[in-house]
Image (cartoon, rainbow, N blue to C red; front, side, top):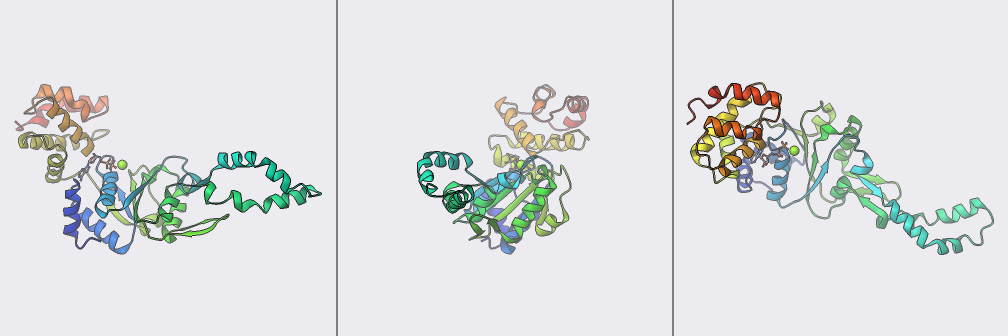
Length: 304
Ligand SMILES: Nc1ncnc2c1ncn2[C@@H]1O[C@H](COP(=O)(O)OP(=O)(O)O)[C@@H](O)[C@H]1O
Ligand SMILES: [Mg+2]
């Protein structure tokens, strides 16, 4: 367990993640209170990475549920290994035949086979998916429910239920209760509004694009080869581009990619030619590109 907010910040930094005081406070409280964390914010600001680093620094195993449209309980919780069940019934055909040999009617035969249910609906044929894996785990885990906004609201309601009591009922097997309450992190890119219930259950954290000072730290940490001068120029240029009302403003992942490509190209300063030829690292839409190119003087003013 973390002893203080400062310790969270320090351990995250050792794991190469810059946690602002706000992020570190939420992490600290969530671990103390045993509450899930819901992180919202634009793509590429370090939401998924935060969960991974949380697992790393707490020595917990990471179990990840990646959400998508159409994700249902079966895919998230457990499925029966249908093919294996079928194969076993094929291989056991004779034994099953023997079993119903002396029955005299169909209902009697069905009843006799039903008596063998336990053999086919046992852990041997159960395929746990991430949610059940997290609940069943013998060790302590971080459960990352990534991009929950991509799943349907019905799934969200189901998830809320799981997060409330950390137990699931498998009709054929009974109720499975968590040995350790997982540390849960949910992320959302705000594709849609999440339910009040889910927000209430979680400690809420909004991660926005980083302040210049923090982004500089991230750059130094993740692209250590970069010169101090170039790193500062990159951060300032990116911050200026971010306020340009683009369709997709560059995120941390883009500024890292840009910085890495500048290092590979041995760029020492941000001259217009090198910026123009590497701009695709930073902006992904043609319209955005034209806009930035048109304002390059302003973006690069006083940088070199
Ligand atoms: N605060 C941070 N400290 C270190 N690296 C960061 C930070 N924020 C973002 N990154 C880096 O930015 C990239 C994108 O992060 P990611 O977690 O995938 O974003 P998201 O899940 O929010 O879309 C990763 O390479 C990550 O390491
Ligand atoms: Mg992510």
